[in-house]
Image (cartoon, rainbow, N blue to C red; front, side, top):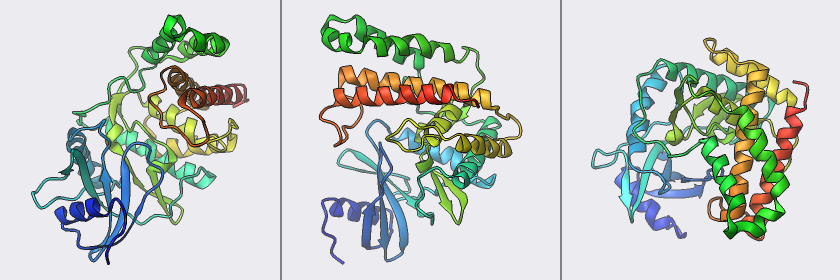
Length: 330
């Protein structure tokens, strides 16, 4: 079958390098904000081909291989990374790094329900438990990722900069709220570190017949307190819709139940989760407000006329989300 698409030639070349057979059909997988992934069906079966964002380098491949067998051997499934004709686990094409994974059958679920959040919570808890006893150390980590004091310091510099005075004057009250509230939730400098996932949104868990069957996207693994993952997970899981600031208390409670079943060693309390949610939610609000000034980080959604408008709107929405769950009796 002759493929007709701007990605066809690239996918055919990558497929050939990994000995996957002739491509019969392919489709772009939604949900990824950084890497670009395709589901391909070939004469040999189904596979996932992925083009890595250029924020990564080949060290993330080595890191993945270092934990792949450990996690799978201990009952936590992650997709199997395939080997190329050259006995490598990636292929370079026009300056981009491509890799291939075995396909994991799944139900294409990306939303939080009581069932999915319980399963995701259990899998995240198990991941933290397993990594707490692993000797693995990432060779690649994104610099400044989840460095909340640095993000807040950047926002403060925008407010005092003459270059951004016009914008600063219009967001003073909102910005001052973030500057005053966020440091209240900083983790102590001596907080215990482990290997965290780094991006535990619901789209990074695969579900099949009601069960979590695989954990995706380990590129953001880093040495950091587990609280970072916990706060980020519950921040994303407990919003009613991405476009709202509504908080789902039932999801919050079910996620905690799942996490504590997956990690009996380091159980979490509602208050601990609430505090870490606050940290990551306000951090994200500050990141979006920083992009209101810079207009160069987050991809522009068609819903907004420019990044400045988008950054402010999303920053305000996350700040309202913080107020909603922080004032909730949980």
